[in-house]
Image (cartoon, rainbow, N blue to C red; front, top):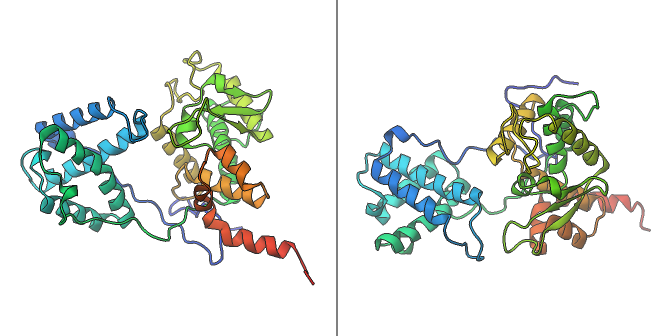
Length: 350
């Protein structure tokens, strides 16, 4: 067996025919350099963030903090570009031609998907500028250049070898492992394999865990998702064991009285998305793989259950999907492989 490379990293994805090529994701947003940020734009950005926290989205619910961060980071990317290009004034002075130039420059250094994402995330900001400062909205201009989302893209499914190796580098659930960080990371990875969204995972509280029955309860995040008090997630036996061991070492954490299930290492508080992302990619690097997203575990969950013959309606219930198109999208990556396997399993038909 060839030695694992920790430099370039092996692909963590599940192979298809032909074999899929894994491309390392390019960060969409650069970090904000506050030293070069104009005071006017900084104040305006702060006001915009406050606005998002005081209004509801199109579903009539408050914006999630993750959504607010994404919208604000898109504005920061625009502000950085304005600084590099020595464009004076605040955001209200941006016309359609200038904004088109920004997106073209962004496209040159990123991909079409990243440009489309930033363009969509800035739409709310320019609507806010229009309402708040009574300035023309470039998005309404016929000369505004739009970047469409990539077509034909399919979510990528993680390979079983990758998940197995990830569990190994976090102690493999061995009862003698007592290190808080390893035990926590192992439990989080196992819970991710149960199909939870990242925000659902991070929003778990102690009272949502019922290990006697092997269940988790997650709360709805958006109006379009599961309504009521949340949905029930059945856990694999090894996930129950991993959570049991995590709760045991969690008792020695400085903030063990906190209601949040997942606590940070070095006695830090409630784990955030950035902490989850860094943890997954640190463990992937330890195992000799390239970069991954926590959300890819949800794609893998859909493929695992479909491959095992679980009914689509049951998968939708557990995953919190109301629209079957979501299941088809998440499971598209391995659809051909599943179909070929199912037909070959039948053997001779005549």
